[in-house]
Length: 114
Length: 114
Image (cartoon, rainbow over all chains, first blue to last red; front, side):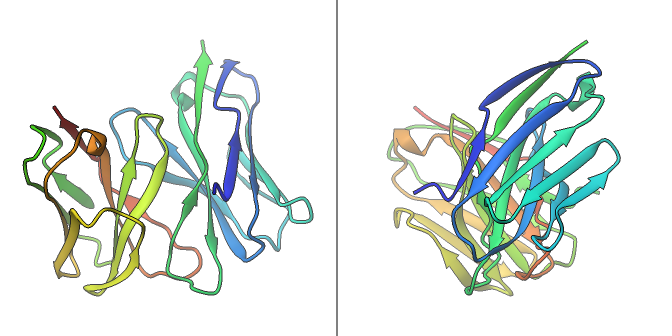
């Protein structure tokens, strides 16, 4: 059972455009939602994260929008650059067990065309 | 200095062989993880150790055995390798298992079983 669903699977955006990746979760016990960025041949790296008590978090060109009632969150990349071309993963963490178990979405491969 | 280092980076082997992947972190973290990334880039946690104690053990064939000699090292031993074991295996570490669990990933080990 996939607890975090991510879309789209792939995305092509022109340089300077806005990239939007969406995620939905099922478990209301999740209370921490990070986004990871992975370049080819590298491991994922934390990009930005949000707690459900805020509706938006912005760091530079990257913004997370969070809708707790809909159990959805999204990553917006403003002024997308070719260097942003990578695979992006949303994830969720939390629950009563609190073991640090990150549940990842399926990933979105972003290509930014120059 | 590489924060989370894995060896080897590439591993090509025959079905039925036994192989090990080593992981070391120099971040002083208490918790380490093994993830498997399949050909569709889906990331799934396999194991987690906190201070050498196993805390996450997902539904993984018992041919996979993690070993943590100390909190800076987490190795993965795989017996009787099968074709389906071909994947990229990532080691990660984090300061603790609670909220704001920022996990730092190694560069991965690409395992190819022929």
